[in-house]
Image 1 (spheres, rainbow, N blue to C red):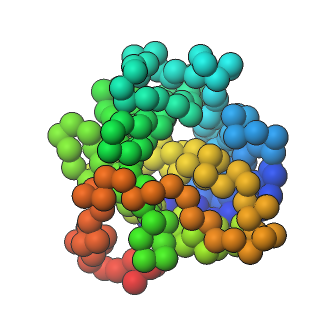
Image 2 (tube, one colour):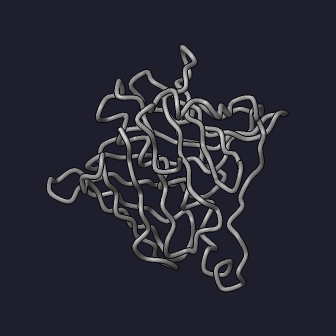
Image 3 (cartoon, rainbow, N blue to C red):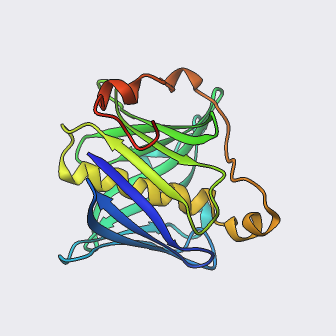
Length: 219
């Protein structure tokens, strides 16, 4: 599965068209006042919709509660709802090695995502937590202008439709936090270069060519 998440509206609010294997599937819209505004991902044809909702105030932002711990430190936690029903949760975590994202589908599956700046690209490796296995990879150029940001999400075909949707919503969540100030950066001419290369051992340059031997859009 290849998911393309292409920005169609820059600034605040932001909007994205989402394609599954080149087929138009979802529309996404993010807020314009704060990263903790609710964001939406809506199916183009059916009634399916997802929302990312942050707990308020920030000190109570611990979704789900079982993530609350002193180590690793949890932040930016977000409830994911499908048609207004609890569907999953996403949060950013930090320990003594660096930061990563935890994605929980609330049905027993959890994923970890690690963010890197590699060779002019912004990349995210996505792993099933138990048993640990890389199941996805995200890439976008961090030099793209704020109106032309395109994420390519590569996922193994064994993943369920619900999991593909959840990991697609994760990319929207990631953009929401990491590119909220994209207008200011675009006007200044600064490249988008967020985060650091913590957990560098989780970056495998061979994963894409192995999992997608037919080639990818970044070859």
